[in-house]
Length: 88
Image (cartoon, rainbow, N blue to C red; front, top):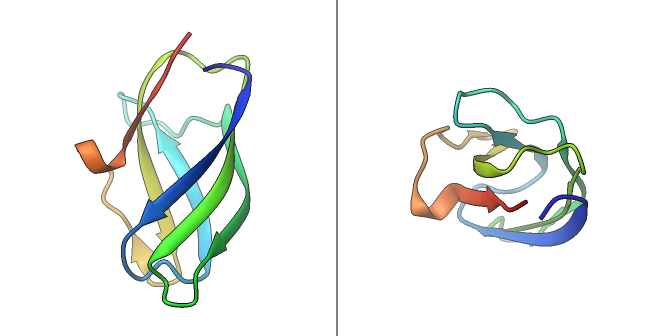
């Protein structure tokens, strides 16, 4: 929901040293009203955790969660595994 902070956990591979987590709108733009902090990974690089702040100006709707690391980036293609929905 708008104006809240949540904990986000992402599982996968090659998640060492994450550079950033981005939230992509349905029209392909980066949503700068959603920010992250306290990014950390486990030593195996299979778990990434972060605090996510959904700003009060964030527009409701779905977002693709995109992760960029030194090893590369996830694909900005919507799937059940990488989609979140912002509620009013």
